[in-house]
Image (cartoon, rainbow, N blue to C red; front, side):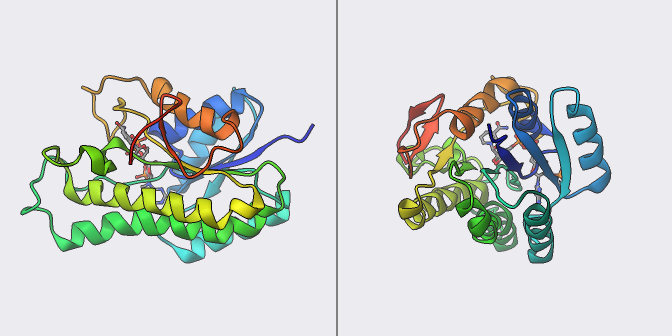
Length: 234
Ligand SMILES: NC(=O)c1ccc[n+]([C@@H]2O[C@H](COP(=O)([O-])OP(=O)(O)OC[C@H]3O[C@@H](n4cnc5c(N)ncnc54)[C@H](OP(=O)(O)O)[C@@H]3O)[C@@H](O)[C@H]2O)c1
């Protein structure tokens, strides 16, 4: 049986790290993407207790870094089965819209939206070489337009997650004829550096929904937004 080759961005800590651990345990060959070499190597080495995990240097805001990762994966594996776009930044926590600067918005879009589009575009050919390819975009309920009026706590981050959900729908359409599902998932509020200590969920609880979309969800389910394996509104 083919071992799934799974690339996770921003996986040296938080939900990316936990997702890498859980998928390694399930037998995936995990490519742990991280922009910091030392922390990426250390995380991959820690996770080797759970399965096959290899560090891949990857900064999603750098075209050169994305291209180098793509070339390496092409040479070493020849295809990519699962792409998990997890890396993100939250710069304007608890700011009002009037305090959020254009620079914060630009940086948020660069990582959380353009970084994801660039990753999918760069890896499209390798994904198409797999007959079981999937793309999982780690989004957030913070980007739900249906819930945004009266619930603003990080404007640039929220705008970026709404836009990320559009990236999901756009690529789900692009990949429809290739049979590659592309979905968004909200992990819920989790105790990571981004979520903080007061969050209600453990990283493992948050990662469970990401793992489900990456490994188990019906292949004909695409262009949708999930939390806890249930579809949620945009
Ligand atoms: N935690 C929550 O409550 C929560 C709720 C809803 C959605 N989410 C989403 O879940 C995902 C993971 O969040 P988290 O809570 O695990 O956050 P986190 O602990 O802050 O981890 C974010 C990861 O993204 C990486 N990253 C940031 N910019 C990058 C770049 N340019 N290139 C590559 N990696 C980059 C970080 O790397 P460095 O260590 O190098 O900075 C880090 O590994 C994010 O998409 C987030 O929006 C989280």
